[in-house]
Length: 527
Image (cartoon, rainbow, N blue to C red):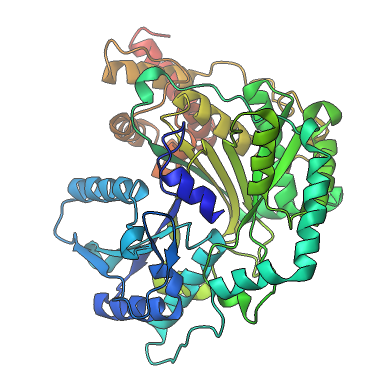
């Protein structure tokens, strides 16, 4: 995967020219900048890959005694509420699209924003050439421990990432497994499904690589319900989430056969203490999906589970090599624009342990970006519930389409959690919609009317994405006339169009928003 990331970083091909990196924010309180700076310094000594240097030819180096990575501290405590919100948003955008300077040994970056009333935000960015997502978890665990126990001695592992690479390259049994995997894939390449055909973005959107995060959270009760559904199907929760994603993507693209890239982070135990090493251990499994072969969602879950077992059994042959072989066979470079990562079966039951939350606070935002990837979908166990996070390329996809697809996926997860019989629905059809779901509700009409007033002359309909400025005005309007239905900022991220927001507001207000909307529409002569 490291070679693929490096080529994609420097490629001018479609969806190329971006750095593969993972950025996270943690909202905590009362962090001491000097103590955190020292913890970062010790972390760099503990994990040399955080300072991996890559030269212009792609050769990798670990320098013997590099200066520790800095901690960028920004004091925002005197900013007004509006200025603070704008500054934090600007900073998020900058870190989301940044390129870490690998030529100077900058494979990670750490920042601390000091906020009013003792609040603070920790910013952490890692380049996936050096730090895979599982290693990101390890980085956060060790940073929290080093901050919490500044006097505790910590020594680097006896073996490092490159020792591990040397071992797996030289191991005779692993070499035999790779050859078996290569032969297995050779017999299947001709029948491998194509990449999903995603709708292109309008030409005006395609100038600059732009990543956007779409996120929603499922409650602990919904997580337990989904785990129960998975047990009944004899699949893992991750396979359930993957299968439902495939069904939604098939509906959204009107395709019945396509392939998905499913990252795997299992580490061959080739050296002692491999679980404590930071590095890029990931592989990718190339999953072929055939919705025509599964009459129901339940059958699709079982089929995907069986296919994943086969893929894991032959994963010694890397997915990157599979894609190279496929490109050679078809005579053209084959794309893999959709990636799905599931972390519902991780050890410990949650993305981070108690110490990370206690020291740094909850993770409020996580964004990953990679070359040749238009949809990077993730589900992860987080804070007892489930975090659903899609990182999408708005320069490559129609914004309204991808937001609607995301909302459909979250809705299907919730529907399956609420009703076991939802899994009996056909793969190519929406799962058991309620009778009123397609009807225009008064709250929706009211929201469209408000948006037209805020943007006179603009084409506004039920699927228009609500701009940030309009979100604030809508929230103020609802706070005055329907306070029980006021959406929070995360709600706006999840329900970004008048249609989806109307259903959320109506549910939160137990239907009161419809009555208020009728009065509003009658008063304005729009009803």
